[in-house]
Length: 134
Image: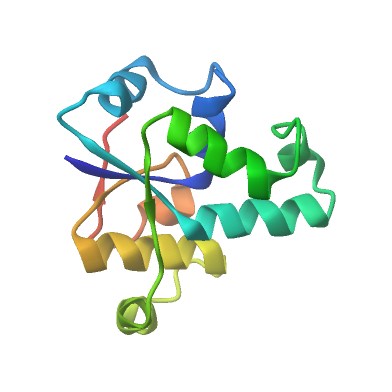
């Protein structure tokens, strides 16, 4: 399975947060699966860190531009870049959700036929997206 982690899922993973389900934790650690973190998630964390969002800043003992890539590599998670082709998927999305970071993640799932790991109800409403069943 090619699994794209939503930002909060990655943050739960690297911080051993109790909200991360055991089932998902096992799939992330399963060497048969390809686990991905989009650069969109790193971008989101850097922006929210700069805005001093308390719900994000508690996750970072150091600047997220350094911490996230380090933890991603330690967790054997692949980085997923964003490219111009993603925009074709993005523009075709219905406006069910206005969060630009989430919309880019959804577009990448469609572009690369990825399974999304999220608990965000606004994302779960998108048609034609494969979701990991928690």
